[in-house]
Length: 518
Image (cartoon, rainbow, N blue to C red; front, side, top):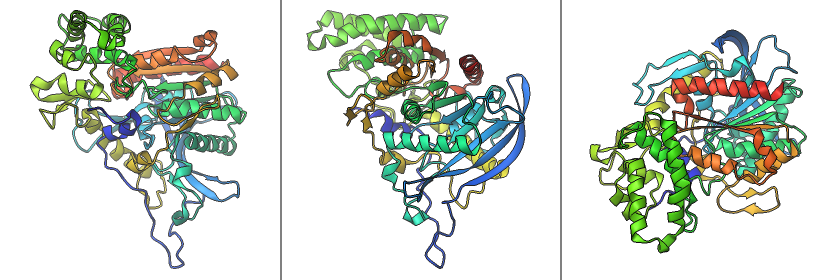
């Protein structure tokens, strides 16, 4: 049995309740008791020590309302905008952040990676229950850029303004690859006007599904005459057909199994399942990558023509790299997907490893099962993030929630998502979503734009080697490859969940921003 397509299950990896959009009570006249059709704004002051300096800032938390061609409100999008006091708008960069899902709010990047306050969680084990710790974020990017954290429609405090909410919005106009890109484009254009940032250096930072939104948004902005200086991708999956846990869902395409093998090997290395474990992970992975794209992929491509002796040799090598028995690899026809690996690696102890961060372990709910039933990392940290953001937003940022529930992850949005995408070359993709052409066109049209790819060695959801492979196969002029940089970390999907990796991520992104606009 195989996983459902990757993006549809990204959300399910998180152990967070699915929350429906709030339907406010109606007043006596049958109108909504609260009005989301007007923009809101709460401005507070704060300071953070980041990048070795103390930074005073204004925190602007509120909503912007997008309208249709008739001037009728269609969606209210929530954001938090941190701006350094006294900085020049034309010299100071501004970076727009968003998470993925689809159906995820941006609480994770905000409270875990780059906001001025950071949620403190256990490194690779379950974080104990409340009270949780919210601390100064030494790795906030406010030392080099102003920050805008945006919640997608239907997530966080963002809402599609349908007739029950006093507007003319329809979820189908926002819950989809191309529709979502247009909404974020409209938001950014309105934001640049409201806060006077049209002439600022501009950056986009997307994580997970956000690395699909990022290229689409970048090209949409360019088509609206808004060039960006840099696109930063974290845990990337720009082509879902070859990034899904090592399984392409296409029996004729075997390359995904080779591309996820280095992540499996890294996981086995971390959990001491590799015989004669090499001292340095990176040296070990270089061996695995060579094998993956050489002998292993050759064997997979042979299909039913692979002879028994070679199959056994490959299976033995796979055992030496992954800690999964040669017999298991043989039974699987040398093709093991991520969910199977997560369950099998620690089977003898009755545990499974995480999908989003395979450093994490948790008890298998079905010791005899074939695939992991949940994600231990999501279960370990989600409560801390959601609890502290709800507290922080209302008490520190003074957000007027208007009685709304903050939706960290929405299965309603995810379940209604339209994955069809209009290829910029003029073709529509009805199946797997692939935005590599968007990125290639955007880089061709804006050859000064830089792209940064970040990923974790222990991420089984969006394998780092698969993301690199995709970038190296962009359909564009080869010389533009020099505009792409790569950084890998000893962490998982949420690279910043590991404090050492969070500092590395800050330092690398700060260097990227500073070097790409001056």
